[in-house]
Image 1 (spheres, protein in one colour):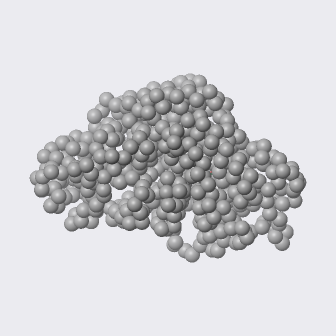
Image 2 (image 1 turned 90 degrees about the horizontal axis):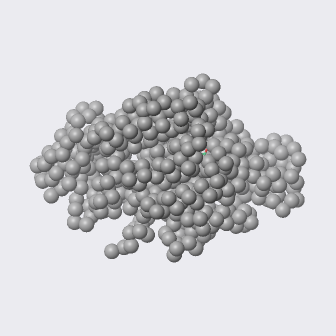
Image 3 (image 1 turned 60 degrees about the horizontal axis):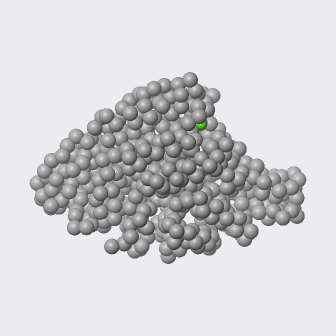
Amino acid sequence: MADTSKLWWRNGVIYQIYPRSFKDSNGDGIGDLRGIIEKMDYLTDTLGVDAIWLSPFYKSPMADFGYDVADYTDVDPMFGTLADFDDLIAAAHKRNLRIVVDFVPNHSSDMHPWFIQSRSSRTNPKADWYVWRDAKNGAEPNNWRAVFGGSAWSYDARRGQFYLHSFLPEQPDLNWRNPDVRAAMYDALRFWMRRGVDGFRVDVAHFLMKDPDYRDNPVNPPNTLAFENFKVFGEYDLQEHKHDKGHPDNHMVYREFRAVLNEFEEQSPRYSVGEIHIFDWDEWATYYGTDDELHMPFNFALIGAKWAAQTVREVVENVERVLSKGQWPNYVFSNHDEHRISARYGEYAARTMMMALLTLRGTPTMYYGDELGMKDGMIPPGMEQDPWGKRVPGLGLGRDPERTPMQWDALPNAGFTPAAVKPWLPVTEDYQRTNVAVELIDPTSMLSLTRALIKLRKTTPALHSGSYRTVTGVPDDTYVYVREGAGERYLIALNFSQEERSISVPELSAGRLVLSTLVNREEAVAGTVKLTANEGCIVKLG
Ligand code: NOJ
Ligand code: CA
């Protein structure tokens, strides 16, 4: 039997916390590290997750709410202190909860001392730490666009050169081809691992290495976007991003990166997951390396894919096909950049998604608030925060709606911050109905469903580490699969239609329905399971 503590990141559930929005401990309207410590019992006892991933809490001018880092080894005073972080690690580890932190390697803040020095002259010791290029014919060095709108190049009069920024001008790209940069960034990893950090989520992991010749990107052939539900990026989508991301040299970086993590492996097992938006399955899978690069690249396909039985089945079968032995799958259905699941497909489909997330083969990463069925928030004019929404026409509110405060109870501000305080984003309109306190006492709530799913997954080897098999011979708008392990078999049947559907397959000859997405039935099964609109059920077979 394998040592399962080593495999925590495979067998466990990972929960993403956006620190600004989880719990405000000092009444300034912004969530913080002490707030997370206050809610530790919720994470481990109420929900039962195994690890939390914290979006950035590092020192930052907050041009992109922390994804613009001004010091890779310190906490922003807005979120607390390094001592608070140490307390958070200690409190988490006491409960066997692992801590994954965000690592933002592609770019720093323009206020990082490295960049301030780098831009000061063409000859200073950090002159080559960022991507500097001369003008071409009096204009930008090439046609690359920034994800957040406009050219990816900004002119710096002092150096008389352009610097590259794949995101905001306040987020200059580091030059990962410079070994000194790599060494400094790996030291930041060591700094956090020495403090006890169990893993890293790597921001835009496939952006680090650029085409060394800085060639223009070709025009994107129309309709090549594989998935329809992602947010639109405007003009950024008009190019095929052939030369500004996904360069094969990234693999060299991740082999070095993994070696740094391995230095600490003996002390306790570490984990890494890369934010990699690549939808060619074979190319996506290369980021696992031969177990010598990332532990896994995030699998975002079910955020972008249409929520339809055949589409979801195809995604899962592609993942199962492309991964070789030892490469562990994973699924993520929402995060701080995409609309919430209940906003995308409605309350009942969100429950079915939660059932899929927690019963598919592979590590689930859940976004805070989705366990409650939190909706996208309405952001009144004047309260918009996200720089992306402000810069790219047509994006509307950008990412504010999915970043509203966690809803703890039915008091004003939902228990996130005191009633008299103005939170950085308003709580969603239905917080009185959708919150932890109310849902905890309702056995049929989304929170009760999520808790039951996590508990079942945890205590059932077939679900957290068993095999996967698609079941055929079912209605087209349903998706059915079997998970098998440790001598047990579970069948999961998900109804994607708005009508009742009936599943009659040989596997169901005998069994027991143990959980429905409506959390209102448990019954013996002999041949058939009937599903109401958008319902999902788990049947223990045999
Ligand atoms: C991806 C992150 O998820 C997003 O929130 C951020 O704005 C960009 N990377 C830039 O760091
Ligand atoms: Ca605070």
